[in-house]
Length: 143
Ligand code: DAT
Ligand code: MG
Image 1 (tube, rainbow, N blue to C red):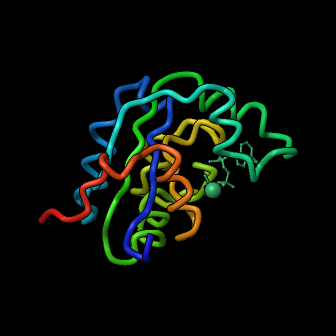
Image 2: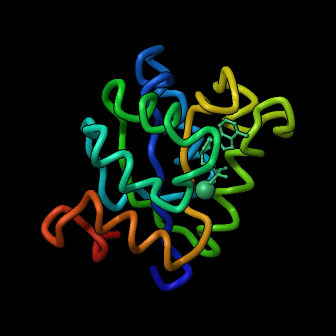
Image 3: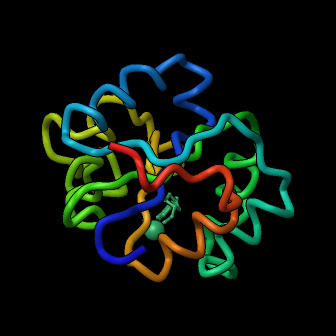
C-alpha cells in the first residue's frame, strides 16, 4: 500500500454497540481519508483465512468466532505514514494497556473484543485490502 495507506475494520462488538460513527470521526479527525469502505460480514471460513497467521494460537478459535459474529466496517485509509500513525491512534492490542485517548482505550471491552483492527505492515495492508475490495470500490484519485 505504498506507505501511505492502511486497512482497518471496526469489529462486530463495536458495530453492535453503535460505535462506528464515533470511531470513524476519530479516524477523520486524525487526518485519515477514507478511500474505500463497506459494512459486511465475514463467514467463519473468511475470518479464519483473514487471521491465518494466528492459526494454532490459543485465542484463534475465539477470535474467528467473534470476528464472524456480526457485521464489520472494512475500510482503506490514506495518510502519510498510515500504518504507524493508525496503530498509534488505535492503541495496544489489550485495551488495558492502551494509552488514554486511543480508540481501543475508549471503545474496546477486552483483548478479543478490541473494537478495531489495524494492519501492521504495508504488505499486510495490501493483502487485507485485497481481501475485501475490488479496484472499482477504491477511490484513490480524489481530493
Ligand atoms: P493486533 O490486532 O493489535 O494487530 P494481533 O495481530 O496480535 O493484534 O492479534 C489479532 C487479534 O487477535 C487481536 O486484535 C485480538 C486477538 N488477540 C491477540 N492476542 C490475544 C490474546 N492474548 N488473547 C485473546 N485475543 C487475542
Ligand atoms: Mg495484527
